[in-house]
Amino acid sequence: MVQHRWRCRLLSEDDLEGRSILTQVPGTPGPIVRGEGSRDSIDLLCGSCGRVLAKGIQTSLLTNVVLRCPCGAHNDTNLV
Ligand SMILES: [Zn+2]
Image (cartoon, rainbow, N blue to C red; front, side, top):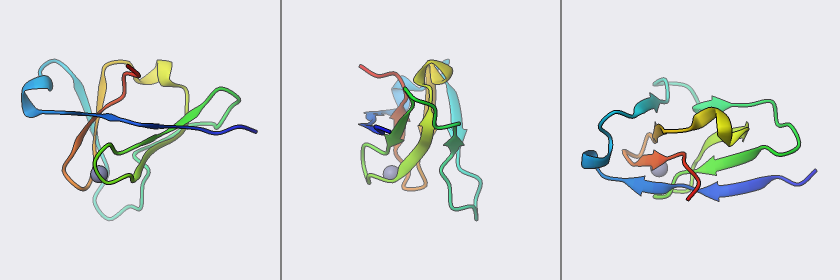
């Protein structure tokens, strides 16, 4: 099975208005979002540190969502 990986675009604080922000629960290893790993799913990596923030997800589920990495970076889940 082909696993696609996408390094997220980073957002500044000014870009966060009106977006849903998902944060990793402190003390958990992550990723923040875990999908079913179905055929067209991808992994989303932090655009700053490269950590896996979402694993095996359908990106259509995460439209307009921001993933806040434990490193402090805000990652855009829109694939642009
Ligand atoms: Zn990071």
